[in-house]
Each structure stands twice: as structure tokens, then as C-alpha cells.
Image (tube, rainbow, N blue to C red):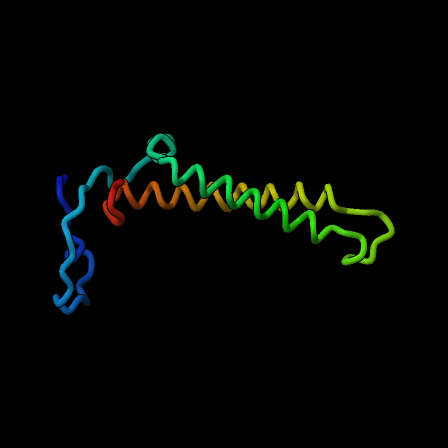
Length: 108
């Protein structure tokens, strides 16, 4: 296992004109628990931000004036959209953490 990975090794089509830095190669095939334990404050912020924005959009989208429904659907729509935002934020944070572990992004 290599301790340092040069990004040009992965890009055979690269013209060699870019000056890419060597990044730390921590783990090539990280498990889920390793990836989650590598979360930073920025990853948690992204999860909370996506959840909050999605929940707010769901609350507005569930208004009876917009949907034309006789029953106000604000709360169920906010919960549904918030859950979708939580899933999206979790996947985005997991992807960012995995990229840092595999050396595709710089560790902070």
C-alpha cells in the first residue's frame, strides 16, 4: 500500500501541464464507520444546512394556497422534505469524508 498517492497516476489522459500536489493516502477502501468517524465540523454543518433548507422549502410548498388542497399539508411536507434533506446531507458528507480518506481532497 502506498503512503503517498500522485493524482497523475489516476489520470492517464492528463497532459502533464498541471502542477498537482501529493496528498496523503489514508485509506483506499474505507468502511462506513471509518468514514463517519472522519467527519469534520464542516460535514456536520452541511448535513444540518441541507436539512434546514429542505424542511423550510417543504413547509412553504405544503401551504394550502399553493397545493390547492382543503387540508393544510405544511407539517407533513416539512417533515418529508426535511427527511430528504437529511439523507442528501448525509450522503454529501459521507462522500466528502471518503474523498479525504482516499486522497482526492486535501485533509483539513
